[in-house]
Length: 445
Image (cartoon, rainbow, N blue to C red; front, side, top):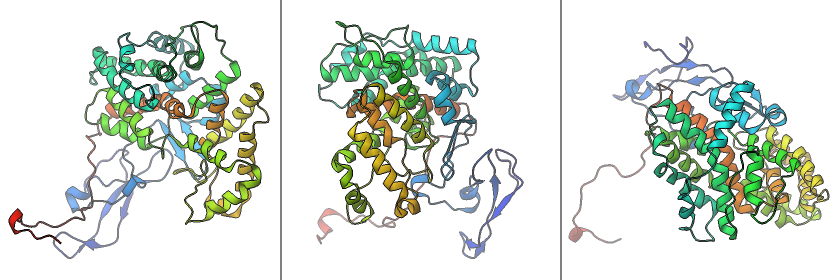
């Protein structure tokens, strides 16, 4: 087979003899592609056109849908890298906007590049004034994620000058607008729900400071941003900025592959993130801790978690990818202590319960064998509660942070000449072809 793949692979993989289209057997030889890190990949693009086979992979857990240079995750070793930089170093030493630049541009910015980038984000942080009226169309008890999906999708009706995805300048403007406006959109959703007036962003505040100011500030009183809280929020935003080809990121790429405008693609990502199996896990952790109630009841609930016939699940432990300690959880655990101590909640019963649960679970042979280690959701919900962010806003904050990763992935996909419109195939298990029977001739079972 004459074939040129991404990295001119010389290795090939030989599969067992399989039945061919015309009976008999045939041997399949596929090119092998090796990335910078991670497992080798079988290039199956020629499998159906030349051999007549499809692959079957529900959930795409063994499928590389794209080639990417942005984020690397090694779930077995508990490694998360953004453009090669360990997530713990970025969370401790960097800022969210610096990480945003890194994800989008490929390198950490120089001082001048950072100044220009952060300045561009700042000038785009306000919403078109007519969008204020858009909020009044929602019920007061509407879920903030419903509002986020609607408002972000509606941005395409207000910013016509950045919809042409073939124009690099328009792509850049749309990207900066989305990053800048997400905290404003999110805080306005919260203010609308509680009946308070919208608070406009301030250009003298940092990204995470502005979000806190717009969330908790009111026109009649001066609001001072707590630096410890702002520092913790900066870490949370960094830790959630991107996570490889997860469900919402894959949704953004799939929508983008059709040529949809960037605002529509990000709205699709928000809708996917809304699912409780994806973006709502930190709220589920809080609900679980409240259900347990006291440290004395932990053994009872661990026993329930082990029982396959019991619907109870230990939330905040284990991960679809990580089979080791989630590196983001390590960072958030320390940040959680700092926030609670700063806010005078050092002896917070939920944190005490969470720590006791973590200790017991990590020492229990069942959880060790299953590799059910604490993940990032285990602590983030406690931090959000401590600083006064209601549970309905937890996933909204996730969306604010993940917008950066979605944009970086979307831009990479647009600029990749090998990408085509997403069109997964299927294993059909329905009826074979059969004749139509008229209504009069049909019999009921």
